[in-house]
Image 1: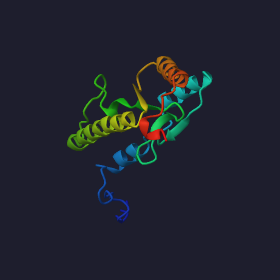
Image 2: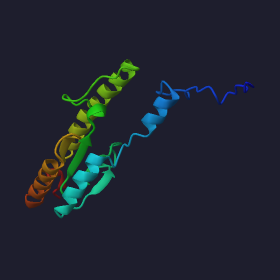
Image 3: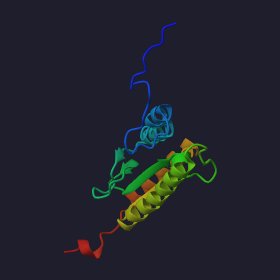
Length: 164
């Protein structure tokens, strides 16, 4: 049996600064969606069926480098559907067995960023609604619709800085 020469293509080396511990892990992590997940699509479909329109994967504030899953600009409502693993769900988060230091730190940074996002949007007059991916989609959609309708019915008065 003839042995084939080994080339540099046979040995995988992670790109500089890569978080992947193997080629398979890297491929797997790259396949994970950051938007249009099944829970997001289902909730969006239910909210849309209630007659509400929104922006998908949009920045609520132009200066904030973060996007919400659904944005209702006139009502100032930002909706986030958080994945249990990536956002540290208290019910379902399981620390990884491989490269646990990196991934646990990553989830902790995500949780810190989520709290910062909530605070910045709230300070700017936005209502932030966060749901876990495991929550019933119908209940999420109903709460979103109720909050948007409430804000439409009772628009906030402009602050003193808006009065001229």
